[in-house]
Amino acid sequence: MASLVVFLLMALSSFSKTIASPSPAEYPPTCAQISPGPISLQQIPSYFPPREFIDIAATEAIKRSLAIYALAVDGRDWDALDNIFAADAVANYSAPLGILSGLSAIKSTLSTSLVQFTGTQHALGTQIVDVCAAGAAVSLTYYTATHFLSPSQNSTTLVDDGQVVYAYGQYQDTWKKQGDGSWKIVYRNLVYMGPLVSDIS
Image (tube, rainbow, N blue to C red; front, side, top):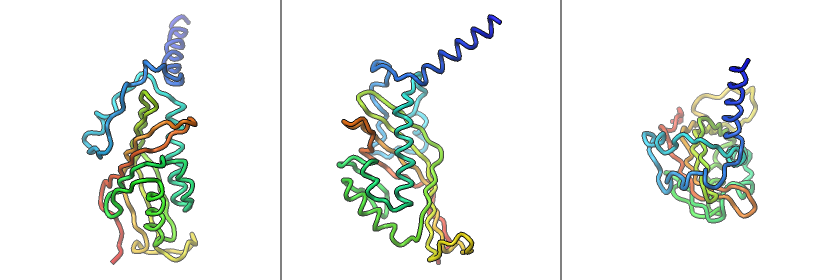
């Protein structure tokens, strides 16, 4: 019985380190410098070392914003990006879009580049978020983006692979906590992890 009590106390102590908001002294003094970057796949593990304390509230807020980004792009709700990117954010979307400076450029370029597709689906995968001191954070998120060229959005309509383009990559994001308590991206690197896949001739 005593050993069970000790085990439960240890588990509770470990859990409290996860859910508690760390004191300023417990935050890493600086975040990994992943921008302007980007960092290579081989560098990633060393840029995100284990942390004793995790700020769950900030981490979940950032994960939520990344999910909303995917939903906003797929739903073509470009104004929703106002809540994701800082007004002076810089986003390197790689070729052919290149480096976009400012929220307005990010919104207009994404809107224009996706107009050729009848729909998209951005699915997020492997993800890590590191919250640091002074209201800073970095995150890395794998994504798969499916782009539909077919004029039909009917789920019962069969199309060949020539009507679909798949992109595989990662978002390397640097975040800053805003005056209202929200978190916004101040620098993004989109890194392709392979070629675009399609049977388009």
